[in-house]
Length: 274
Image 1 (cartoon, one colour):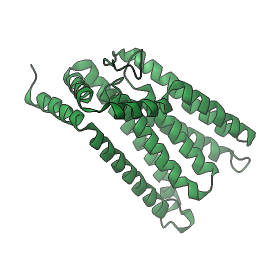
Image 2 (image 1 turned 180 degrees about the vertical axis):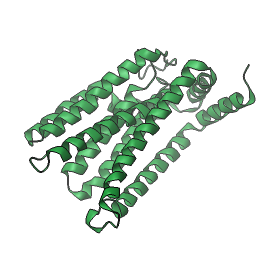
Image 3 (image 1 turned 135 degrees about the vertical axis):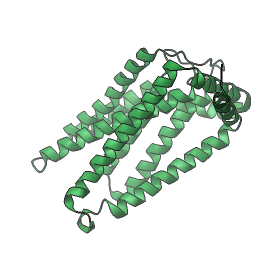
């Protein structure tokens, strides 16, 4: 029998669905502001190595600790959602309440916009982008970066499909006909794919482009990932927990890939550029 906490969660989900568009804009603005603040902090306290007052060992330990924290956080969120999916119906009831509220409250014009934006996370889009970027990196003489890029994007796709078949969660009913999706629902492949692909693009921008493009690349990656993930909820092809799990698994995989690329880079320097 549902308890008071369960009913509160369902009520909050229903309320969020009834005010979904302003909440999405508020979330997007908050995430972009937090990303800008994190960028400013890193630029003023971590990046300028020659001016840093930290001991060299501690300075090198900071990004390692940050990457480890991201892996733990992403894996923990995913594990918690997976456990809730398997042991109780509280999350399922909240997911359904949010989905039902979205069906009633979101105007058709907004749904059409999200139907366009969600294509940025389609498998076909990400495959074409993967091939194009890898080709450019190879032409520019960056084979290790090209390999890391392909492993990040392609590996995330394989990981997501594996997780989907492990949990085998059915999708919500989506009958507006704008976007149709089949297969299992948990975790969202569009969400994890957007996190990995567009954040990896931002990482490449940090490595290869002039500094004036760095912050726009980071903020653009964050905006794209959040928007693509949200589009799956608005279009009702995924439950909210699917999208959060996609963000979590994508973040963990992305962190592993960037850490591996940086490890190869430091191992091979100064013998060659990576």
